[in-house]
Image (cartoon, rainbow, N blue to C red; front, side, top):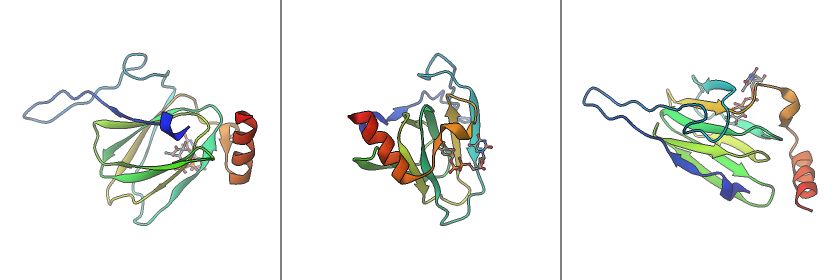
Length: 137
Ligand code: T46
């Protein structure tokens, strides 16, 4: 459910000259990282997402700036505002997501548990609801 998608504190190595956050496969990430991608140059007012994944899980980080994720498990929705590089949003499989309110210059960094495949997407909301209800019964 959306309650299983939590914000996780990431470690910070503080320094007067700046900070470092390190994410290591099989160490402080609860899945195997197969892919890294990032969204950038997102125009003001853009809305992205509008899909779910069957298997994929991800860590999403506001590497710069801020944006909002709307998560939906078919029954409940919740909004998560990301605005700091020391927080990651863990998105579990089977969650519909939408993204909005990207600040100018924001960078949305994503660590993903699978390579890109269109077969893992549910892009139709009615199909998503059917899939979730089928799963819950
Ligand atoms: C998610 C949010 C945060 C690729 O070719 N490879 C990739 O790894 C990705 C992520 C996308 N693409 C292509 C496929 C589409 O033609 O880029 C285009 C846009 O992809 P998508 O509709 O998936 O973009 P977003 O920003 O709506 O969603 C993506 C992720 O798919 C999604 O899992 O959580 O970023």
